[in-house]
Image (cartoon, rainbow, N blue to C red; front, side, top):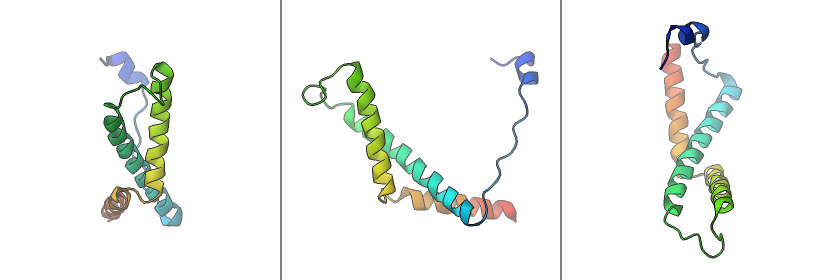
Length: 103
């Protein structure tokens, strides 16, 4: 719980600055792909929860750690390869938001 001491020590948050130009478009595309990879990672984790840990993975703590890393790499690879089509839609929404904010 925040009290008066904590809230007076924290600096006020500044509003985010919208990227502009070609570098801004690249940043928006990168963020959209990252978002899609994060969503894919969550879906893959849910898919693999029911998979038996016997056999190739072998089970144990190390298997849990490396499975998460593997699923993250798979999700990023899928997103970088075009993914499910979520990234272009997210990028379009970010662009629309930025244009509306400018006017």
